[in-house]
Length: 368
Ligand code: ZN
Ligand code: ZN
Image (cartoon, rainbow, N blue to C red; front, side):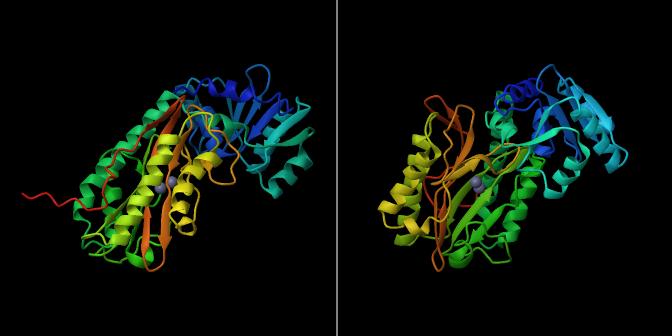
């Protein structure tokens, strides 16, 4: 993972934003630019020269300096002993610049009012400057996500043969424990285990003590966290023999999902990709059972740009890592979702998740 060059990638966008420096306060963006993982930080990045200053509180001064040095990031760390001290540092860092951009999506109304009252500079809202650069993953970032996917694949393969008779919460616990044992920092998000005609009808159901039993559709949405990077995958199973409707909807969602994965390539609009999956499901008469977007970007956040849906105007580019995850849900039936994580390439994509998806049938427990 090469963090050292990232500040330069952000600087290259500042002229178009018509600012002389950028004041970052979003911790994910700060982590991406500097390698710093603490919970308190601001960065002032000058457009010209190589000025980069990170301001944090007394808990993190040493850590910030060490993490920036380890990442090869040139910069200065300042410690603010109090909130007023921090604000004075930021005001001084912004003072030499006529126009300083701030992250409009991440600064609160109150924060902006404090800065506007204290800074002798023209503060200008900017939108998604670092996020735009974060979309393009480098080889190290992709490797971390591939490792996270492999851990989730392995945990799912081990837990799935023993699902019947567990509660949703027990299945979640087993998956999350195995992912940690296999080397993940933790789960990428609270693992979704949704079973039966009521719970599986909720796309983001939280696990309960409902028992997974014969006749149920079971949606498992599981990801691991590795080196700060997320993975994301969903598989759907049927306990016992699928009914004709369960099999038909499984086949339909899988067809739509595979068509989506096959269509992904750089230059395609997210709207078009959404349309590939949605078109197949709508054509079959289940359009209003597909109640969410087709996918989203994944990286340091589990949900990040680009969002793949009907309203999006993003164009997929090489290095985007996105999910393809159509689903159908109906109270009284349950639900089916199939989700893979893919890296966009010039003429297609590389699929990072590898769990089998050809059949909804649960594999048999191994006999000993
Ligand atoms: Zn998911
Ligand atoms: Zn997802």
